[in-house]
Length: 421
Image (cartoon, rainbow, N blue to C red; front, side):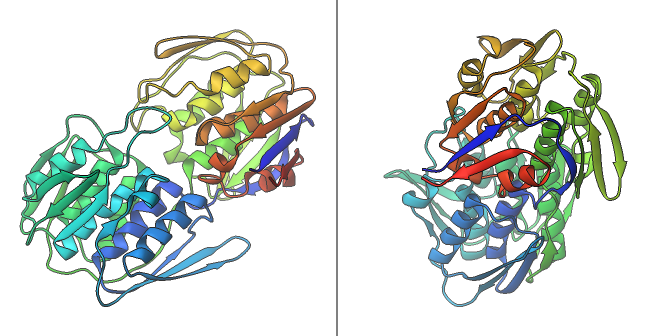
């Protein structure tokens, strides 16, 4: 397995860019199931999770071609002929987002057989809300031998009121409802920019969706959809991670393509800890102070502080002046990076959903192990600031959500390299 080696090397400086958003690309690729013909998606990130989704869609009959350039990645997808409406366990187990094919398969082909995704390192992530929503639209659902078996001649509009906010659940029901007969209301809907982006793509395909970005989404079903050509939005979490890289090294970095409106809770905290932030040249520039100040963080569904940035901010606050309190309200197991940060000299104590981070003047390089996607990024960030060498094992987690992060950081002056395993 690959590892990444980082040596603290002073401030990062220069320009970089945020790639296409993983959490927008995955549902958009799944949405291609809804329309026969050729789709073209641009700014598709070159990530392990995207490769897994394309592999899954190919098993169903998709013909896909990828073209990658220095800055622009394009996928051409074509659906024609018979679709095999099954998502097997061996693919779903590697990426929970595979469940996003359930809604569009059921809507377009009247049936779907999708493996239950199982557990996840960062906590329980059940799909009960997805199934509740599909039942509200008239689907017959059985759970058998670890698979969801769903059938419906044609879904019918209805009211879906989620008990808890779910991003993929909102997206699955949106994709199911666009071809349902009549009107569907999704209440307590997720409000993330990636949900808005999916609605934007579906509307370009001919759907009638309003309210995306609010907690109530209205969908008037149509009979058919058409293929689409679309460029995917920039990844707000990758952009936020790159900004934290500048902050943790007292750097001066411009992250192009970053959308300020998608990052406001993160930018607010970065300003609070002493960073200078300016919107310019189609992106966001951050100048970091010599040492950041402490701050308290509570993760919350969008538009609150994103759980996907919690680990990165913890790495930053590990060397802050003062004591910070981080409360994780989304996932019950998302402090697994704490033990690894402690190996680097961080002073962090955890009780339940709360971590108390007492800033130290400097972290020390160590051998550490990534446990999940965002934990991987936090350890890379900590290594940028630490004295000596940090070796991060199991970075296949990193490759699921960051497009060659080590290359982007190296171009900004970081002493970082990948060791092939």
